[in-house]
Length: 195
Ligand SMILES: Cc1cc2nc3c(=O)[nH]c(=O)nc-3n(C[C@H](O)[C@H](O)[C@H](O)COP(=O)(O)O)c2cc1C
Image 1 (cartoon, helix red, strand yellow):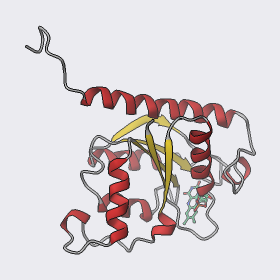
Image 2 (cartoon, rainbow, N blue to C red; image 1 turned 45 degrees about the vertical axis):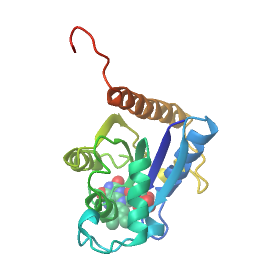
Image 3 (cartoon, helix red, strand yellow; image 1 turned 120 degrees about the horizontal axis):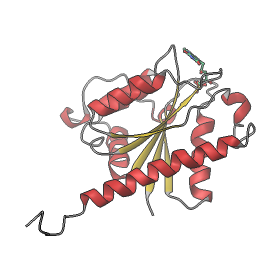
């Protein structure tokens, strides 16, 4: 079974995007699609970035553990709110902290807002940053508008049932990319094109 790690990015008191992280955990587990873990940046409370983990002389244990969890995952879902047209510093903080953990890692992005647009202004900038880190960003998106109406605190859908249909195609795409990546990593058999 594939392992998928969900990074919940908001560290704000009273945050609502965490509901979407809880939803994906339940969705993946209930449908037996992956083993799942949430890396909650609100629990880690990493300090503002000073240096990349691989260059630290005495890296903090929680940063080492966070990096290992990202590295070991087959795929990542980043759940992020939109703040002033961008993603919060908390997620940039951990993207910059790691390095080769991101390489060739399938990453799917779910953006969240309490308004009409589902945090969709985040997509371009977050995809670009992940591309610079050589992650494989999944083309599917999962923007969540009016998060307070669409999900409850336990991560259950309370809004439109179409949300589950959209979640399915988002997750299908992530799993397709994970499987495609695994196939590409397999040694290529010798044939007339590869003597
Ligand atoms: C500093 C700040 C800036 C925000 N900027 C935007 C914004 O540009 N667009 C938007 O749709 N919502 C914006 N919001 C509202 C968030 O979408 C809302 O808080 C939502 O619940 C997701 O963030 P949360 O997980 O921190 O709750 C902003 C919220 C904060 C705290």
